[in-house]
Image (cartoon, one colour):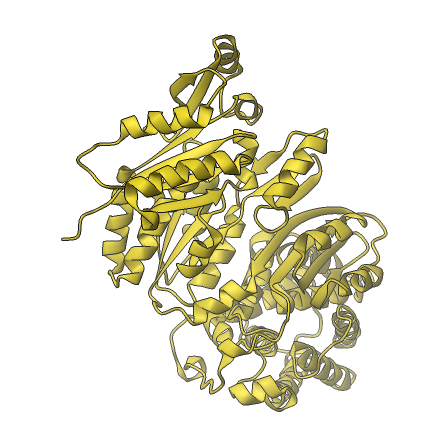
Length: 600
């Protein structure tokens, strides 16, 4: 049966069929991802972008095609991830703009909208590269134009145009040297062709196929014969993204301003909402520049160098994930290949990514100058989902270790994200600890992985480490803990009245509270040290973690004392990140103790 018009419902169902095929090919797309950087996430990024459409829209939302296409474009912008995902979102924005308030469209009117979509997809980049998704979009658009005036039937027009897109896809292999050397087509272009193939299949059959991830011939592992681990084309470290909402937003002007901060810059959207993607060494400058145009949200900055290291990991079975409220020395995190999901913090309307957007020194300077007391927000389920999606391309098991569910919503976010994941085993561990206490637990897990333990063994060792690790946090005052909502104001009032120095611990419910005290303003760090030493079982061996907010010298003296007691290899020294400094305040020192397991 000939299909001579599209309305909103038909458009949604056709697009839904296409995105189902892309989702089923996510793993394959990740494997052939070598451009612009070989970070194995093109499939994931396109899947996240398209899933935002599937999750945000019902086929009956809008019967007219203009309203439906606008909703599709808006959902795609909200969910857009990665270079190809943002380009695809801009394509959908351009398509919506090209419909000109129509209720239904013919093949010729469809061609006009596709042409506008192609123009805007190219316009999203300062230097469009041929041999990518853009090339396939352009050649498909030209073929749609050529056939639309002759073929009023969408089924025939899309079939003929798809053939040209498939040819253009094969030709990408020879248009970029990196693709030719790797013996693969462009991953973004392949994803777009999968989208078209799924759409064509629905137009022909009238049914949305239930695609599977089974490895048929199409899904066979690609023959990549190029040393991709040495080919990080971008000279910048962070894949940075955010959304800008406002009025009269100027996409071209913002893109030009951003270009001096990095490469692979893509700015997609319209005059009310823009999605920004850029590779940069300075994510915070990107966010600050975007704030000059409108309200910024959805800030993220993925470490591409760390992602590249996944490909080279000696153990390709198990990954360890922590949140940035778990403190360890940076060199230890890097050496042990521990993955970090950052907490976010803000001063009023100004927001930062912990460990990326703001240093501890900058945090304390801004705390002193700002009229707003800093606040933290845990990583969202989407933040965890993105990290899990990337990691499952390289690891079969993910051990995700986080600060207590009783003290933060971080654990809940991780749990919600884990429920969405397939084809990977995610073990969630409540550390029942804070700062270096949680860090030592993650370190124990990473050490077990390096020792060649199985996933089950690593999980058991990690859970034992939770019981074997205690945290003691000495504060100069409870002022910051009260402002952060962690300690009642009445407790602070009593502490000041009797000149008490509170020592915070984590109770059995995972809540932070006062678990000890010393008295007097003099020699607070020494008094904390004595308190902790009295808690040790002299029949056991320990290792220690020491972390501080502002008083490096005093914390270093404590670490030196523990080195004398346990040896250099059993003491870890770090600065508390901004996320926990919000609740501890200046002068905070945290001491973690962990029982050392004797070798069997």
